[in-house]
Image (tube, rainbow, N blue to C red):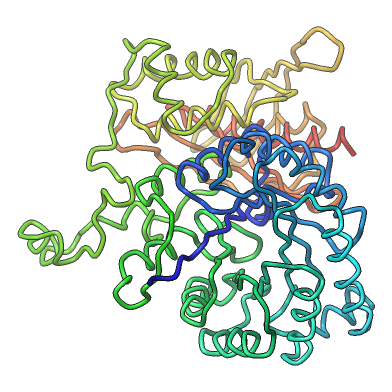
Length: 517
């Protein structure tokens, strides 16, 4: 009988640690709904003790899963009673609940971060898991030994044994810094299974610093692991986490070699991937395995000839198996109505309020007047821009640009400002720059008092092909105070307007963060 592999998706927690990525509570809920629809076994919804916003998001997702007995909601907690209590309250509404506690076990972390001895760590593991178990709230308790792959193997086995004895039913072995290799990881997992007896699920959580996260996860399955922790599109800090779509399709396509079963509806992969890309603002690389734009494209004449005879010559996956449609253009244009627009947006995984539908539909109409056909990618850009603009303080009213090859670029920008408790008012500033976009950004900085922020990334791409293509601009700003990164996105058939809107998105996020601090 085939073993069943569970997938624990950590996009909403570890994926959000990607620099510049922040999911609002409503966006987390949309992603969680899509994950449930895809058949994910466990959703790690967040780290409730980290902020009130994260607590609310985890609680909302737990409430959404109140009637679901196939998807467990997990919350992360440090090894403290305060963290544990907060996490247990957050996941309370879910039908199936998991508490995930962690503590570092490598000497590097013990000496430089925790300032604890090995004996103190073992005592903390026992005390906290026993305490969590006594609450009788979580159906499962997961224990993670942070930086496990750089931990002395003997001590790692002691920590796991301690956790199992205290009541942990899921043991997670993270390759926290992406350090291990498949053979080495296999040896570690087999050693743990041999040394620590008892009934527990063996899980892995791999990072991609050396590009080995997927390979290490697959090696772990062959070594006996029954749960893989991963993220959609491989999101995560530094080089990211193990990419869900690559692992699940490797298990599916090479079932003849690996021989395991999973509950994932692979036909939901493409839409899930694109929803996360849209809401995170992290574009999928064209050559990304499984979900990249080029994954089923063939440029070589020899390859094209083979594909025309039989797709199996150069494709090991049927595009339909991951939900990829052969024609991604939908029949929406300037004559389309609000209802058709709303239905398509909903089908793509977005949950917008009536007000949100109205605002996004207005932008859709503006763009449809300039484009003959609106594609799904155009819609994602339009809805993504609207979601990024929520709770904004600065909005574009007008702009004028003077530029040429023999004159200094100048921008005159007027912004509408919505201040707390005041009627909106307008402010106009002019500024020079090295080009029209630089000049516009400088004018915005003067209005917002953001001259000290640092523009660390700017790019603009055509969402689709053609002379009437929608331009999507993305920027990243670094705060001078704490180095935090804020992303912004804007779309328009006018690349300067798209750039200004993207910059305003980032400025609004920076402004809101400063207000909260």
